[in-house]
Length: 128
Image 1 (tube, rainbow, N blue to C red):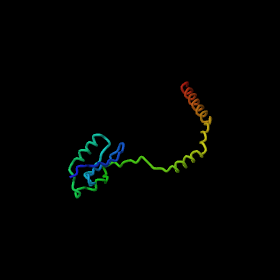
Image 2: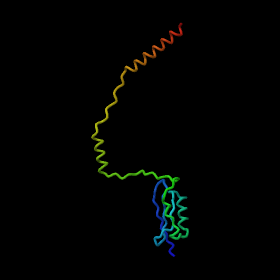
Image 3: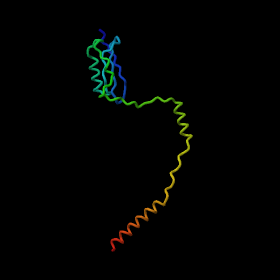
Image 4: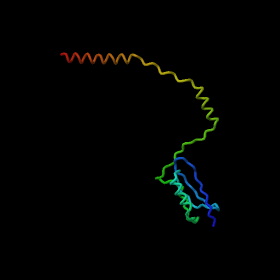
């Protein structure tokens, strides 16, 4: 029996990934999820040392997400350089935004007059 094993890991930064362990002949030994932590990878190593399961007993439904699993977020995109350059040219060609117009002084004057009228009425009402 060949004791060599090969471990394939998707090297992510913060999410769980499926790790596959292959025997020396290329057959699947095991498959499990792992986080990029020392503890989780140690568990993968322990799992890789376990005896090989017969091919008929391997469950192919393990890759299916259940309702309880978090769907991994995709945070990368491949954008061709030509599209980026075209977007930059469009941004540079756009005219600069106009400065905001100065506020009119009329609303401020009306507010001051209303406050003054309220103060005068309050003073007149208290003096009676």
